[in-house]
Picture (tube, rainbow, N blue to C red):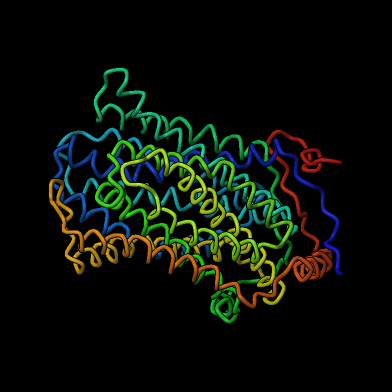
Length: 471
C-alpha cells in the first residue's frame, strides 16, 4: 500500500480559527432564505412581485459569477497570499451589502433591491470560494481534508442555529419581527470582520509552486472538463443539492397537511434537523477517514433515503415522535457537503498533476454553480408537481385525501431519488486514499523543482510550522 507523504497534522485550534468564516456565511444563507424576502414584503412595503422577481433575476445573474471568480483566484499570486487576499476583499463588500439590505428604508424599489442583492452575492461568493480553496491547500492529505471540512461544516451549523435564535429572543423581549430581522443583520455585520480577521491572522497559506514563466490559457480551463471525476463531482453536487432543496420547499406543507404539526412544531423540528449537523458533520468526516470518502458518501446517502420513509410511519400530530427521525436525517445530510468538498480537493490535486496548474478555485466555483442551479430549480420543480397533483397551497385550504397522498409521494420521491443518484455517482470511483497518496508524492516531487517559497506566514508573525501539532 502506498503511504501518503509525511505531513504535519493541523491542530484543532488552527482548524477552528480557520473555520470561523463558515459561521457568518452559514448564518447568512439561512437568514436570506427564510427571513429577508418576507422582511422586504411585510415590513418595508415592497410588493411580492417585486421581491420575488428581484431575487429570481439576481440569482440567474449570479450563477455565472462563481466560475469567473474561480478563474481569477487561481491566477492570483501576491506576497499577502492567494486566497487570503480574496478573503480580505470579500469581507467589506459583504458587510456593505448587509447594512444596505437589512437596514433598508421602507418603500425601496426593485433597482435598490437588485443592486444590493448582487453586491451581497458577490461578497458571499468571494468568501465561500476563497475559504474552500484555501482549505484544500491548507490540508493536503486525504484524511486531513475530511477532518477540516467536517469541522468547518459543524461551525457553519452553529452559525445557522445562532441566527435562528435571534428572532426568538427578540420576540420574547417584546420586539416585533422587523426588529428581529434587523438584529440578525447587525449580528452578521459584526460577526463577519471578527471571523475573517481570525482566519487571516492565525492561518498559514501555501501557494502552489509553479514556474515563473508559466501562463494560463483557455485550453487549460477547457481541459478541466476532460477529467471524468470533474463531471462526477459536479453531477453528485447537483443531485445532493436538489434532494434537500426539494424537501425544504415542501417541508411546511408536508408537516402541516400530512403529519398534522403546527408551524411552530415544524420549525422546532427543523432546528433539531440543523443542530444534528454539529455532531453529524465531524462524525462523517471521521467515517470518511476510515472507509474512504466516496464509500462514506454512498453509505450516508443510502441511509438518508431509507430514513425518510420513517416519516410516513410516524403517528400524526405527534411532533415529539418525529425528533429521532429528524435528528438522524439532519445528522446524515450534514455529511453531504463534508464529503463532496473534501473529494473536490482531491480531484483538484489530480487535475493539477495532469495539467500542471492550480485550478482548485475553478473547481469549487463549478460545484458552487451546480448548487445554485439546484436551488433555482428546486422551487420550480416542486411547485410544478404540487400543481399537477391538485394540491391547494392556500393557508386555509382543505385538500382532499388524494391530494395529500400526492403531496406525501412528492415530498419523499424527490429527495430519495436525487440523494440516491448523488451517492450512485461514486460507483466506480477510483481516487482512493492510496491513489491520492501517489498523486501527492508526485506533486511534492515536482513542486520541489520550483524556486518559489511555499508558505505565506500568518499575520501574527509566527512561522506556519508553529501552528501544527508535533512541530
